[in-house]
Length: 124
Image (cartoon, rainbow, N blue to C red):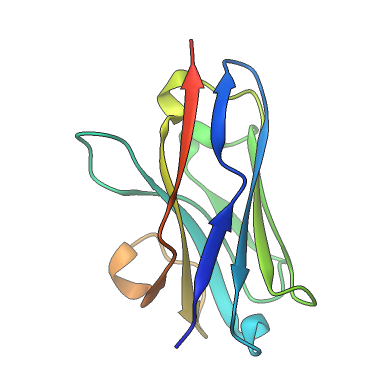
């Protein structure tokens, strides 16, 4: 059972930056593809970004391309989401998700492991 714990959220102003971290309990973290999803109030949860096991392949939601960067440190069992030029529409609860083996997929149903989520609020 993989346990995921997000950190780094908070309240920021438009244009500010935040870095989210997700620490995994799993010793075989390097065999998991990882992803970040988010859910705003009144909206469905959506895929934001994903990264493969080695970190060599990444994928982004169109609206965050060029602003967000996903990365991972397999030695620290941690995946990151660097968020720059934040906008009010980025306000949401952000979730970290893990999928054993396989590549990056945007469908939340294929990720069996989830963190509890962390709030990111961008004030206008």
